Length: 208
Image (cartoon, rainbow, N blue to C red):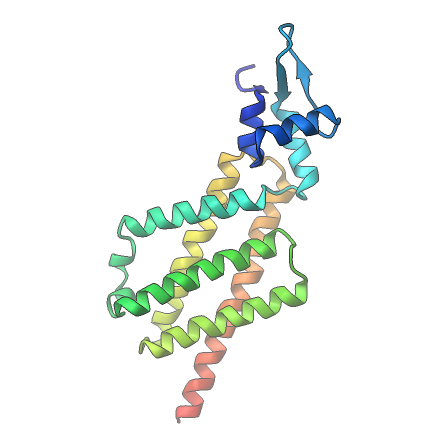
């Protein structure tokens, strides 16, 4: 039975809203709730999980996903993972800052795609734009194509790992949610990588 019941504040933290919002939803019947003998409001975790899946298409709240991914990304970078990347050591401080900004753009684009907040056409355009951006960064810094790909994969892997980590912490149990996370992440980032490679090839042909 441990962990089966949640308090109002715990539900608010999980969903990512103010406790007063949870109270209002419960009062209006929008959120399943129960009362203890002492009159305290309690929420069954299974009910909340089901409510979240139905409200978010089986996925976790977008704002919390972004916050978690940004925190984990900053932690990973602060721990010096970039210092072990050969391509990173070749960059100037300004170029390093620009790559970090591209990493944030990648995060926001990926989460918009996962949460269905943009159309498929917009998703494709965003992926191509990011692919061109990573190619332009690599070319501008004098990186070989393999190094530019390594730079993109470095940030992609950190972000995807952080989203998987968030799903685990949020106890997302829906198989559909997990399959959507994997499939959509792959489709989006593959398009970025293809555009990156195509852009490099076009530039190299133009030079020749």
